[in-house]
Image (cartoon, rainbow, N blue to C red; front, side, top):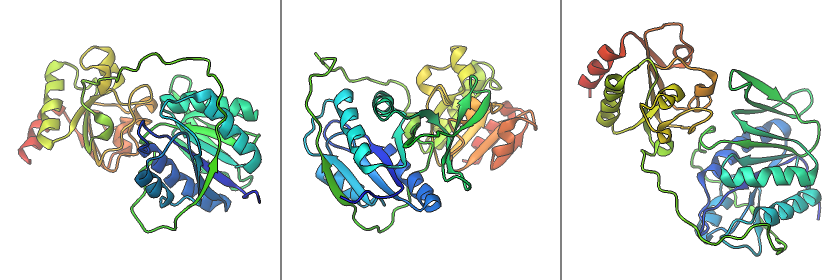
Length: 325
């Protein structure tokens, strides 16, 4: 079989039952833009089974090929799947492999990288193709999130993981159906055995999927300020979130945290209340469609990226905003 040149792979994660996770489509959307720069094609590599309707949707996502395991099961066996994908990569020679920075993705991608003797950049917030060399520029927070580092891997394939919601979902459009290519997963006894599964119950608000997010920073400062932010979120039909200092201070639970060490969000509207805008925080929300910032400091970093910046006391501004809704 002819080896496709400059193929960009996206690892498509699936949930038990075969539903393809949204991160696959976010990464395919970004991969299609990268392919325009390097003149390559895009392929989706399923790490597990895919329900027929979901597989049909994946084949219309813009990828030229979909690689699907011919024999798999709902239980995620990272050792076996990694070996199979690495073997497939050795024969097909993709130039780039992108995967989700999820629990499964973080288990799978390093194993593939080790098998292929290449590097892996984790938790990227930006991906671009370098004009001169055609190599992948992988940007991620470094030194505790105090700066952004751009990394180039000299070996191929170049591999990176990206957290959910860093890149936007693709716009619906008519696309050609991708070629379906099956590959096999060798059945070996894994190093672990699952005795039972207990679903995780998140009792907090689901900020990852919220269309409107109101996020409180330490500028809110106290329970009264957090209460105002919550009232605004409820008024708008959105979800309340918090910056890491707010979570660390115990004002909100961890499930509300936005940022590099919390949840990455991509809402239609993101309202930052009393947030300065550190690199760590921006990494978790900068892809929001519309950003409004309320801050008493006009020079705060968040004010520079906001579509609308309101300078003043949030205790005065939030009540005024609520009158408008």
